[in-house]
Amino acid sequence: MITIRRFIYREVVASVAFATLAFLALFFFFDMVDELRWVGRSTPLGDYQLSHALLFVALSQPKHLYELLPITVLIGTIFVMARLAQSSEFTIMRTSGLGPWRALSTLLLLGGAFVVVTFAIGDYIAPASERAAQLVKARRLGQISTGATGAWLKERQGDHSVAVNVRAIDPDGQMRNVRIFEFDGNGRVASTIQAEQGDFDDASEGWNLSQVQRSVFQRGGGKDADEVRVSRLQEPTLHWPTRISPEMVAASLLKPDKMATIDLFRYIRHLEANGQAAQRYEIEFWRKVFYPLSCLVMVVLSLPFAYLHFRSGGIAGYVFGGVMAGISFFLLNNVFGFAGNLQNWSPWLTAAAPGLIYSVLSLAAFGWLVLRR
Image (tube, rainbow, N blue to C red; front, side):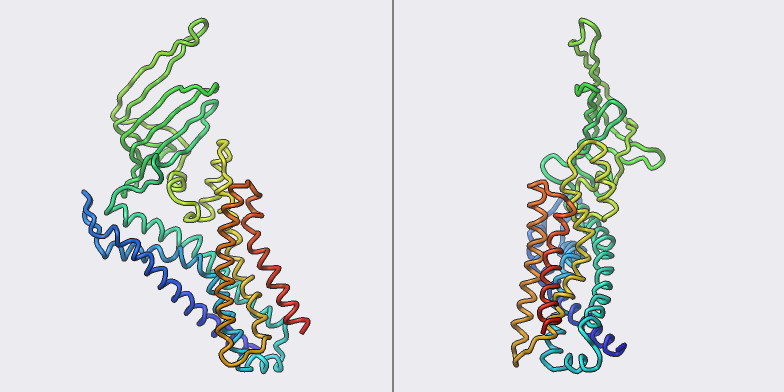
């Protein structure tokens, strides 16, 4: 039985690797075509050359690998199971003691290995490579930013609340065009700070701001409560105490699907502590948790193909069906993510729904084609 398991594992891993490389090559081509529009552009930081574009696209591939692995696991496993059935090798394995439950446990063990690989890529390799890719582009084309106004964050400081706007982060990690709005307990503006740049103080919690323009709003008491006096100050440097970390600023500038699970969890805690909506990030957090587990669903879905009877050349149609099933899973996963965010569905249920649907389908196929026949 150990020999049979090694044979199945070797064939499945080789097929999954081949399918993954084929899809990655396709994504690399499309990403490279899209990136060519930046090649030759001159900036004060230098020229964006073809070598920079190739490096940027290469560093972007781990994100595609993370998204593709459940699909390629399904395609590769279906191909192996169908080929073993077509050549009657699986029939010989069945007569040697490979029953349905033993075959299922064999594939689930292999699927567990793919779960670990998918989680490692999505939580460690892909976020690091994505940050490196953004850094390569920023060093040649300018600052890392998002949207028209940059990143917005919120924090409570005692009975006051603070809204922070960071327009961009430069390649050296410094924040550019920082704006800070402080509100008192009644929701009125207490002070504003504008700084040309800022960086994070590792020695103490806070930011070091430079070229600062500060406005303080002072309100009178009693009958003069509506009277407001504004004091404007200019300071070369200012230390502003805050618990907003570099990871939180990076999280607001990057898309949530490019963040690690622990960074998403910390950012969600920060948003909830400051009364901000965290639905989008909660959905992405639970997708990060459930998405690697879809590899287990895919190997179960592929097992019934070993119990089908194939004619010569009929295997291609089943492999094509596997490709369509994998693509439909990817699309359904995205659709549920957008719909859950718009309809305010439960984040964990929104993230788990595609996997649950395909789990029911795979178990139904296993029960009908394997156990009942």
